[in-house]
Length: 422
Length: 155
Image 1 (cartoon, rainbow over the protein chains, first blue to last red):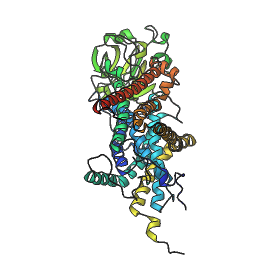
Image 2: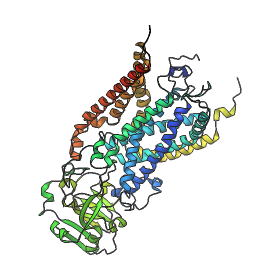
Image 3: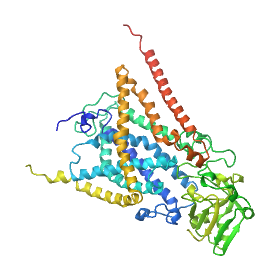
């Protein structure tokens, strides 16, 4: 077949002098480290929901052996989920330019002819569809979910979780096949590298290197700085949403960057407002609202005034969302969950099933494990930062548990059933 | 007919074994991923790869080539990075935060978070202005320094 450089199947079609083993290897190794962290923090985040505790916590009931590593989510340190999720989302956003650059650097191989040189090569190319499609699928669903743009085909949790495993299967195979060569490339090129940042004259058969490159407009090192600059810019405009005050204002484009929604004690960030959840003033009114607490010894119906008469305790805990944003510690005050358990006959704190007034929404019900109920900082909070909760933060009462994902800190609590999880 | 050599047709047995293991795990998770809306998920998965490789990448490559050639035609090829960097960074931010910047999730965002989504477009435009402004300033400073260091032309 004649080599027609007008066709992308010809190596001569690709003119950039940047492409080559060094550029691809550096980006590949950055992604190897970064995506490994994303995968691990993702698995940890999944465990934080305690999906094996109750069907209401479990958005992926068919997980099978993929939940092999699940463990009882701890309450210490209380910032565990906040840090894990902040790293997961911020790092994911930061890696986008690296992923795009990596895909750009290897795109000529998509068009290589013949399509397969051997059975092993054919399988590898099929695997690349899982790898490239998977990377884009995971990054896209994540980026859309944190912006509340639920256009993907199904619920975020199963898509992002199962998708991660499909992607990771291809990622591990790719890493095993390519990392030795990537490390070799870097070692060899570093040893041979002259003072200039240009790669030494490549052997003509070296893959990815253009046989008829355009004159350079930037050095390879410069191009790497360019990619790093993109990452830095995304990081700088995102990371602040995990902090309060002036730092949050630096997150100019992140969904929970910029100003707080309100001012004063209840001014901090809101995941879902009362209006969004369909909570109306009449049902949370002092006279109408009762907390129904059920346990071994029966059922109690407590008004907010009665709750206020119980021993109140304080805990400084953050709100940390699966979407990656969080607040610093807020000062919550309310009744200890274990005290409520004791009121209905459970001196040894058991699991609890918490139901919200909310009528729809994936997490209007949540189960907490015994270790979470037992923690003295786990509260049914009535106050935050010295004032009564506002409707948007869960008035009349909300759960707050150290290190728990935001959605398990049920707002507008209506019913708590101790000793049960569904 | 030339005799078919066995090894090149099959390839590395280690690689085959590794990929079969990878496919087994991918299939185990994949049937769960595809359980609800198999067509939609497959469309997103394959579509993401195709959209990136056959649309997004060619688009930005062509745009980049236009900038390089446009500057090259006027003898300013070495200035490429002063245009490429701010343009690409601005486009990157738009790509990542498009739902917020475009305002397409504004209603849900406002109702869920209690905050206005108005700022995102303004912030993006502002960052874009700073990127291009910074690039122009850097270029001006470098040109000035180059002029100072070089003795005046004699011809």
